[in-house]
Amino acid sequence: MAVRKGYIRPSPIDADIGAQLELLRKAGVESIFEEKPLSKEADRPELRRALDSLCNGDTLFVASLDRLARTITELFYILEEIRRRGANLESLKEQLKIEDDFIRHLGIIIDFERISLLEWQRGKIEAKKSWRERGAGSKRQR
Image (cartoon, rainbow, N blue to C red):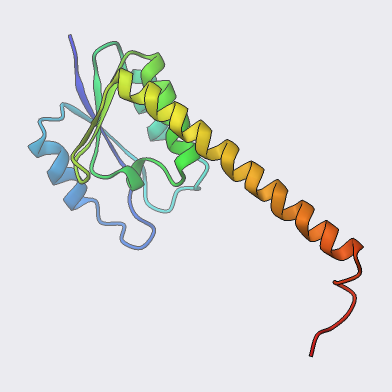
């Protein structure tokens, strides 16, 4: 049977989780995994427990995507794990329900963005190297 699970992470600016808790309860969430305030950024044991608990058909609810992930790359990896478990994600603030097919498509888009950014970065580095090799970097302009 599909279960509605929730994940809460306090903001480093405001550790009050009351608003997140209220949103999850209104959404009918049955069990909530709550990170402790000021936990190490990389150490998120409650997120790990929430993801490990997901079964086929379950939905993980968050008040907002920024409470789930800090970067788009991190979001991609979390979404991929949710997809592998046959579960879904619902973000209440953004009114976004992410189901299996959408997660797969989002992964393709995120991967495209990552590759594009890497290529842009490499191009900038090569341009800077070329500029320095031509000696332009050694002369100060006034």
